[in-house]
Amino acid sequence: MHIPPGFSSITAYFFVEEADDFIKFLVNGLGGVEVLRHMDGTRVANAQVKINGSTVMVSEATLAFPAMPSSHYLYVSNADAAMDKAISAGAEKIMDVSVMPYQDRQGGVKDKHGNIWWLSQRLVDGPY
Image 1 (cartoon, rainbow, N blue to C red):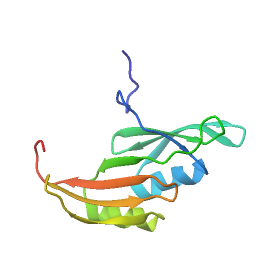
Image 2: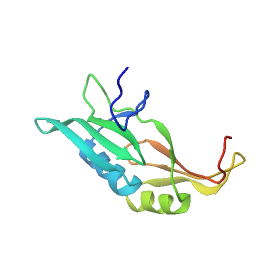
Image 3: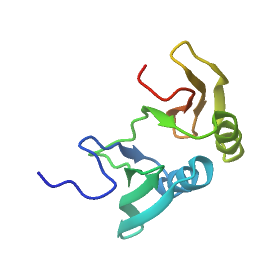
């Protein structure tokens, strides 16, 4: 089996309205880097954004593939700073950052496309 560099065997694929705007949120709000974009006319057919070593894909929603929000757990180096950055890029806070019983410092935001992001800073070096 061959998997491209930066991908894993399961990769998040977002179908959203206003894909260009969503890509900007991934870059400005979550610290991502856009690495590829294929256009179909004026529509984003497929874009790839790398966030902390993981790649996600984005496409403009269509009738065949409508927008569908999802939830993602994103490990970050500083949960408080990540929360501030996401909110300044337009996300809505849905849970304050706090220490969880499984040793993550975590907060939650919802982007304007309806996706939930659990911003989590691991506090220990080890399993749950």
